[in-house]
Image (cartoon, rainbow, N blue to C red):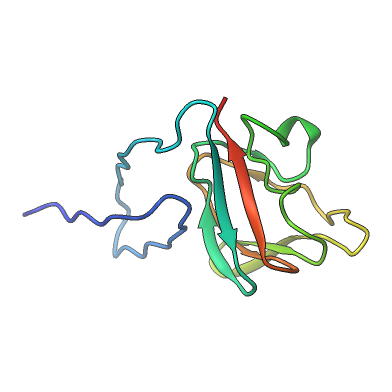
Length: 128
């Protein structure tokens, strides 16, 4: 039969529920030019997101902050939360009022997750 094609904008996370195991192939282009910066608006409330640039990394390591990195932990204000899906919601990390995170999870390229910023924020990533 025909292959279904669904457009998913960069930075949007999603869940797929299949009736059996399957392989999904993702195709697309990085829309940010070399040296460009992506700004993904993070409104108050829970949003399902993913990295618009194909980066993986940890939430808080210094090596994963700044240009060419995931740069997520540094972009979120205090009282923000990150949740991952593992057959149900799981609070993975929370940024305390002091600015410290309760955990340092690793995210893979293409992994989506839920974010709830303490205040409206912008997730910035720069492609070297």
